[in-house]
Image (cartoon, rainbow over the protein chains, first blue to last red):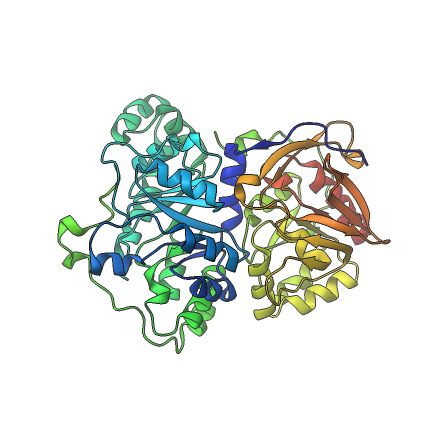
Length: 300
Length: 213
């Protein structure tokens, strides 16, 4: 037995992307208090997302939605042992600097909060802490990865309990990846132009058939069946926002969604865990939301 | 840019046909382990149900969230047969969360967190702190040969105390132990499955082949 020979390297892509790899097959739950974080961890969440208001409340209350109070984030970090994520506004690199100093494990540069910059996203290469970003299509995902995102989540339409947008986005991203793999090399230049994505990343995806980072799905997941459907559509894991703590029985629903993600291809298990969960969150149909109030169109 | 593209082709390992290695697939990076084992010639089964344990000659417990694996293993009736299989000599390799699952004692676990046990060690969960303290480094590991092992530590555990029956295989510069073996059991704080490092899995397959003979 001998000792370590070289210096440690912190904040490399491999270390940042690696944490997302370890979250795969898991459920990341939105929480707004330490007590909710405790319920989430006890139910088997693989990480919690600390925020001040769940998307359903942001949607109903309106106003500018910002990063959470550091005291709230501290209290959630103190409460749980699993990784803690927190949201910064799109382009708000100072909120991200604060979250890094607070010692959260992952930053979500999120369209659920009000954007701070309508031109630029955060330059995520400048940070040791990893970032997850939302995407509605492959081009958007690759632009975020090019800016340093170490994990992607399909956006869906947060705070609705309507899973249709999540379905559309995960199908779109995976469909566009499949299309790239069918193109010949000389067609990838135009593909990169059409996707508005870096050519090198387009070439890489055409050859590997997958994103170079983990792809979760989010936005409107409210039931074990919703979560399992996202997994069957090719998601590596699931974010559940308002769907748990806006439902009648958060403890039981959270545990049920965790089980449904592990046994996503076993309808018998999903049927069993879906029994007697009480009321699901009251949903809003995405088609009833006027365009200016859609969150998934934020980010570019 | 991809992690997978860093893989190097492994040396040939003569894995006999019919040898089956399970990868615990409740949560975590089980696909990466399955990929490495298949590249080395093993037949790989994803394990989520108790009855699936009967068919395998060895098991890998992947990286992930140990508390989630523990809950799911107990809820779905895997924990008890897994403990029995480990006591019965089943070769098992655990990385990160898998190392925690194999430790006899856990420090800084969740309320009520249980391990499967088997390794005579005390392991400290998430010993380095938050993700910004995660790192990669090179380790010299004598049993794997001259070339250093490139090791990625992600919110990693360390082996705090090594009991008489377990042996340390690697330590950090500060002396903390990050790889152990004990008979048919092998555990690392780090993740060879995401760096293209095949030697740990080869070393483990040797244990599986010896035990199956």
